[in-house]
Length: 463
Image 1 (cartoon, helix red, strand yellow):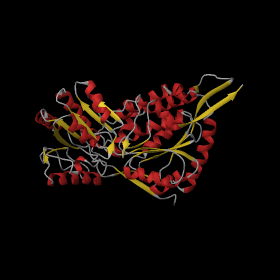
Image 2: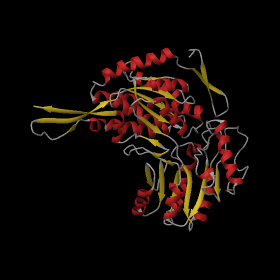
Image 3: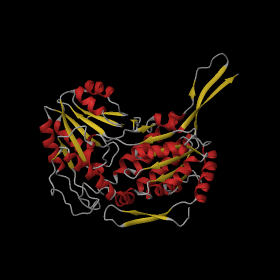
Image 4: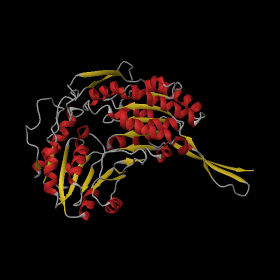
């Protein structure tokens, strides 16, 4: 590829060109792989303590620069500025700290009992070069799940951010450099789709971690072809919530409204469909609608704004199409036209609530990724479980009840990677983050997350 070819980032805030960057060329990619291999060869021989210290310094850089990073996030993908700092100060910090603190115990040799004159143990060896492909919606929260544990495990990392948020990977490079990382241990490349496929087909890449669409997941699998390496794929979601008759309704409504509309609904584990016991349906819908109307749709650089734009015009048009299609099929919208400002630009979309919905409508089955939710009444737990599982996706499901045993029994029957009770849209770093069905394969976070970034090597020693 011509080294002068560039791409531009159009800000959803006002449609302006926020920045432009050159794509890497073939020589850049070859060089990155060469120095990543060299760096990893020596890095894998460093102590866990040294790796932990480096990652602590990287975290320190991010915390020291969280305000400027937050501004960059807002301009690149449109999240309201009052929320953007928390991506670093809360989620990024919490996840990085947990993985740093648990690296030594998670990566330690597995010692087996000496037997018949033999010493036996299993060592967790780094894979080599880990390619991290991060999305635009939570560019740091998704990438930290892999970048920090990959480095802790003794790998080197080459990162490619979504082209909507290229400053994310650049910030990582700056952070690792400021922390004193060995040359080539962490690198970023700005690549187009064809270059990503070329990178992943290279024998020097030992693992790929991708967060994005189902279509993107298929592209990753195709790029890997016949290569015998693993890919961690976090893909789509159509996450359901079930509100039981015994729930605490005010707190349930507050949490589910936030889980539906935070980040303008652009979250893989955001709430996209809600099933409410018929005895609480009208009361729930009334409260949910009243709270939704309190959002302030506006320019995300304004500290008063609580609901920002979609990432691009095409995303807003797709979501509106889903809404219009459902209405044509009989769904009833509860947010009237004109309640929210419509003059802000083509990326700004008012939140919407739909009732009279069913699973013949794509709004209840296909991923929407925007500020709209369908709400259905159900008669009992059986019906709720059936509808919650009636999906190609299986990332999270939430149950809203005062009965923990009931939540566990229902959760056992849900086809999801995570089952919540009385919360949603949150990743606890102590728990494995994983999905089933079209939500992907693999696992990040928790002590199990390190197992995806290492290979077991057995030692069987006769004395």
